[in-house]
Length: 73
Image (tube, rainbow, N blue to C red; front, side, top):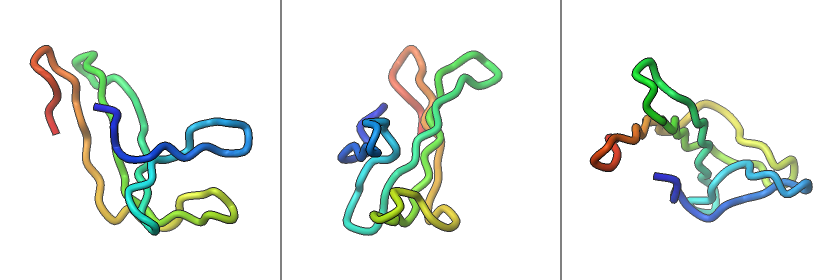
């Protein structure tokens, strides 16, 4: 549930995104939902390599939820 692409780290070695291709990167926000299930909110955005930031509105987004049987997308 956490293999979204090639990890990209900032200068302090903090994970900031996953590279999907040259211009699109995945932002992952991890949280627990109202049923106490682990969730990942994924947003695909454009990435600025110079400032190491994700830019603009999400091109695509979805939520992965971990269950006893795997995960639900």
